[in-house]
Image (cartoon, rainbow, N blue to C red; front, side, top):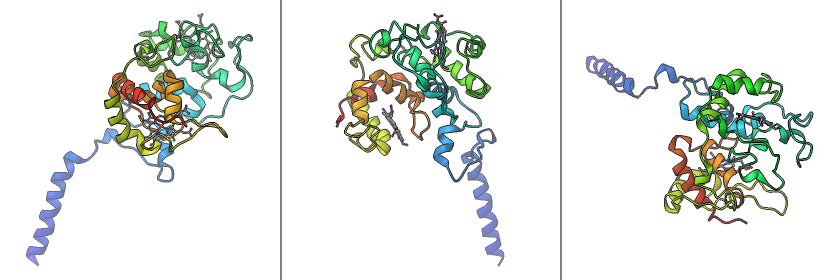
Length: 266
Ligand code: HEC
Ligand code: HEC
């Protein structure tokens, strides 16, 4: 009897000792929505967001804010600043990327010609700019992003991305030919097999987001639209439970990009 209760007490003590260093700090505490953990990862913020988390979140808002933030799609009208001479209309014209480009260089980058041309400048001139100024610019009539569209905390992540999260795309993708110009294929293969393959399959063909008769796999998109895929790798695709490599930096992301472009395209 004595031995038993002593054993239990000792066990509890041992547990208490090992549990302390392993437990998450109170700061990291997160209340789970047990029904929808994927949605939680896609839409919720951690209690203590790191710089890497914020920059990736900002990058997803830049990509397609309503998908990233689970808001209604702005189907009502074409963005007033979108040039009438350009090719798009409707919700698409409310995406930052539609006017400013996947390479952040607008009319001086990959969008300098073709169906994506708008003539609007990039956001690379705003690298290092005060975040308050960036937020004011996005709330001003020219851009017209209301709090219902992008909330105050969320627009802070976007401003952080504009100020500190842009990469120099020309290091990885030739801005004239749209060819991939950097990246270590072997390291990219290692990262892909151990991360991306969990959802996309070892050959990148497990998920297909193409239309009927038209495949769109990781391989297809990495080879056709490498600047876009570089954004997805660094920030994740908005509104889904995809991981991102923001915390590992653009060098590792470029390795994955280059390897992904070697995967089957159909
Ligand atoms: C419909 C087109 C359009 C969309 C969508 C758009 N912008 Fe702009 N943006 C502009 C125009 C036009 C300017 C002003 C360019 C100029 O001064 O010549 C601008 C300027 C900027 C600038 C300042 C650039 C500089 O060098 O001073 C930043 C930063 C910026 N936009 C960020 C964003 C972000 C972030 C989003 C998405 C939330 C966004 N924009 C969506 C058209 C757009
Ligand atoms: C936890 C699952 C998961 C992981 C891990 C993951 N992805 Fe994804 N990814 C998704 C989902 C879901 C989509 C959305 C597919 C769709 O739209 O049908 C997606 C979409 C994409 C897209 C297409 C976006 C578009 O334009 O439609 C690319 C490119 C991509 N992932 C690349 C990667 C790469 C590279 C990695 C590894 C760094 C990776 N993904 C890791 C789940 C994942």
